[in-house]
Amino acid sequence: MLSRSSFPLQALAALLLLGAGSVRAEGPSDADAGYDRSGFHLGIGGVYAFEELRYDVDSLGVGEAFAGNFDPRFDDSAGIDLYFGYRLHPRLDLVFQYEWLEGFDSTRGDPALELDTHLLLVNARVFLLTGRWQPYALAGAGALIVNTEIVNKNFDKPFDVDVGAAFRFGGGVDYYATPNWVVGVEGGYLVPTGPVKPAKYGSVGVSLRYRF
Image (tube, rainbow, N blue to C red; front, side, top):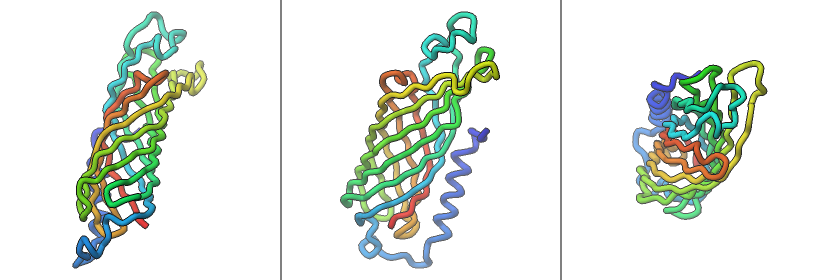
C-alpha cells in the first residue's frame, strides 16, 4: 500500500526535479516558445484523495457480513492519474482523465471494507494566463465506478460494483519547464450522483505532461 502521508510531497519533488533537469540555460521567450499553442498532450500524475464518504453498512449493501447497521468510516486514499488532451485555443483545453484510487479502507468493523474507485472524466480547463506559468479553472463530467470489497475470503472480490455520473470542479497551475515538458499541480472536488452519490472526495495531485 502507498505511504499516503508522504506521497504528494515525494511525487511533487520528483516531478520538479525532472522538469528542472530539462530546462535550458537560457530558455526562449514566451512569444517564441508558444506555450499557448494548439496541440495534443499526454500526462501522468499522482493524486491524494481526502475522503468525504457518506456510506453506512446498509447503503453499501454489505449487511450480510455484519450484525446491525453502522458507519464503518473510511480513511483517505492515493492513486494515479492518466491524461490525454488537446489545446483548442490559447485559453481553452479539453482533457480526458482516468483516475484510479487504490482504496478507501474502513477503520471500524470486522471484517474490514475497502472501496476502490475508477474515475473517467472529460475536463475543460480555462487558462487565466498563457505564459510559462498558466493558472486555470476546470470543470469536468464523466463516470465514477466504486468497487466494494469485503476483506474476507468468504466473500467475492469485488463484492459489489456501483456506477454513476460524476462532476468535478477545481483549478490548478501548469509550469512549462520547457516548451514541451509541463509540471502541474491541481486540486478539485468530486460530486458523484446516483448509486455512487455518497462517494464524495476532494483531491490534490501533481503531474508531468508532454506537449506535442
